[in-house]
Length: 95
Image (cartoon, rainbow, N blue to C red; front, side, top):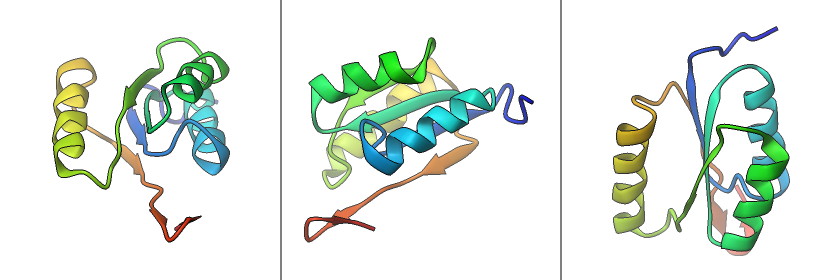
């Protein structure tokens, strides 16, 4: 079932762990997925694991300029955001 066909999903921290699992599921449900992460190597691996059409942006969502760049890329490549799954790391753990 493609419940999210035609939708755009952004997953911060989508290059590993819960974020990667979420990005995979959103992709399976038909969403166009954009992931972010701080490590380019794991971002590249995640794109392969998630599937075709996945967009990855090397960014740190704790930096305002990276958030601005993220939204610019989303707008230019994918349009509006329908689903936002945001993982924040505070004090070493995911929140």
